[in-house]
Length: 155
Image (tube, rainbow, N blue to C red):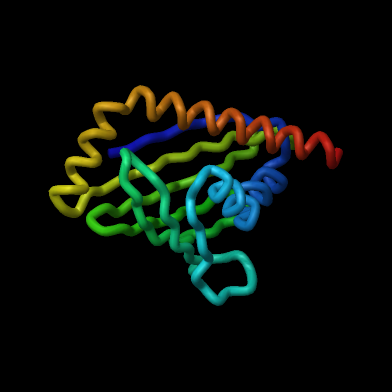
């Protein structure tokens, strides 16, 4: 199952990439939403191999996942893989410079069930696809607006 969204941001590609890879800020934002997030790698900088353990509520049940940064290509994009009991996934973020001060961000999330329980979860997500896509688009718009606001403060 795949979900995706795309948004144009009024900021240079390097700035957008830097904001989208501010992993400490993203961890704090996830915790404010009720998730538990813990970095588990020993790396000192950003790059392939960064890993996190996370737990969050989904469909009335606590889900635990491992996240790993598997591709890191500044300022063009990144790929994160996720693993949990029975469910694998991948998030691909691509950035394209439309001009010096405009960037298009495309995000695709792919879920792959590995067992019957995960297949049932993905099936329930398929039934709620319209509302999930709506929420994903709303969050991407809000995040894009926040990045634009931060860029205007620095310019």
